[in-house]
Length: 388
Ligand code: NZQ
Ligand code: ZN
Figure (cartoon, rainbow, N blue to C red):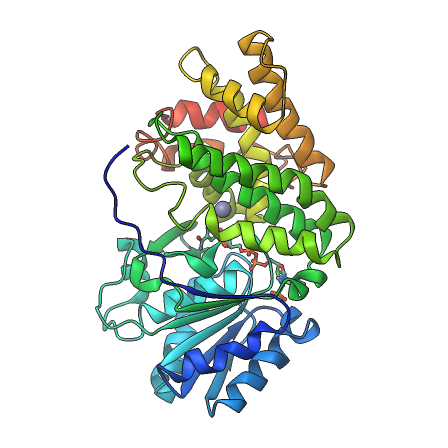
């Protein structure tokens, strides 16, 4: 494990009614904000009204940017930058899932950048030191964006979905009121569970083998998803299950289970290719890619890690043959995804031909060398073929 410095500065307001705390946090920075939200769910689940109330109570004026699409597009980022400049806004409050929060971060990182925001996004991090503060009101447990440094933005004209990351983009404060997520449809709830599990896997399956504390935390997060995820899917107004999913989501992607580890992620880059070409739901794409990736990389070099996963998370008998444990753990992962209504093949995801496999795999030809098991174009092709 490498030395590390970890800072997670987001102030978290967790629980029913906690949006009332937000206005005071914002007022410490500005009295004029951009409110960013998606297709309208926030107006039906109470989040929008609660945010308006706390803004009013604290004398904060706002301008709205609604209609942020899932897999947020660069066009919305441009629109938000324009609104911030025209209205001299000093902060951004995102209300919604990861897409609204990511869009808010990409706007925040580019309002004071004089160049083209897409160029800055392609460079991977803000190209200016002047960043607007971001505040997040979460309505869907999945990405952990409410407490992390990432924004993932898509450019459908170029078929690129890419990450824009920096500590300066970490939200100042985040509201997590589990009751806002009561209205998340079963499909998106399940996709969120898979996303949280995938973030956990990406750091758990790591070349460093001495992250004992990291790995026990990761296993706890996976167990919480496996036990409470289905409850949230089947009983959407179950407060404890919704709270469990909301509370676990940021901790597996805010640095805690990754700090001190060096290796790159495997399934997310492949899913981002699927999203960039087919605009698929992120968590559903991960449900398809993950079991296929696991089977592809299982070998003498990785089997012990799969045994650890199978025994500690799925409680498989540790006395069985190593490969039996590993394969059972992978099968159980796939069965779990299916049991909560997720697709596990590309065809179920709506991708019914292999026309773009070569192009998508080619895009990743040189970027997965640092993954848990280094991969090239042929590996990605094999994973896509097996997932078809
Ligand atoms: O648009 P609205 O009306 O809000 O509907 C959304 C959307 O249709 C709906 N929804 C959200 N909260 C709801 C609700 N519907 C009813 N009630 C509620 N309370 O759910 C749908 C999906 O929302 P979205 O924000 O797109 O989902 P998610 O949070 O999964 O975000 C996905 C995006 O985040 C990126 C993904 O790639 C994708 O672009 N990611 C961001 C990461 C990060 N910032 O660290 C990491 C992730 O790995 C991921 O890449
Ligand atoms: Zn993800």
